[in-house]
Length: 88
Image (cartoon, rainbow, N blue to C red; front, side, top):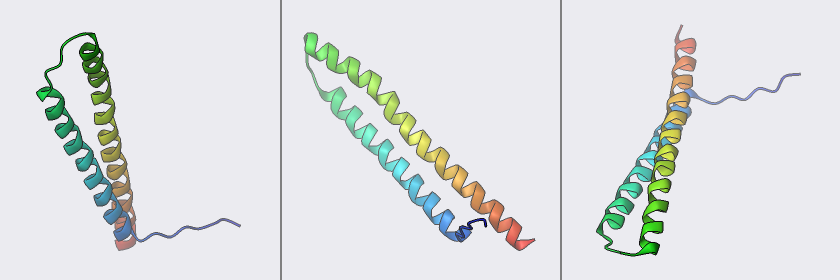
């Protein structure tokens, strides 16, 4: 016997929109952090290490936002396919 999971495509679309909103939140947080980091005027070896860590961390955070967008895109595409199948 096969298990069946039913999810209305409207719910998938809503969840995709919420995930996209979270990606936007991540981007805004990255921007705020970047502005804060840019306003810091540290000097010395510790400052260099900090800015190096920041330079490594920022792309990781941006990839997270992109991953959320990708997941939202996939969820939305699946919902659209389900909707088209239901309407034909």
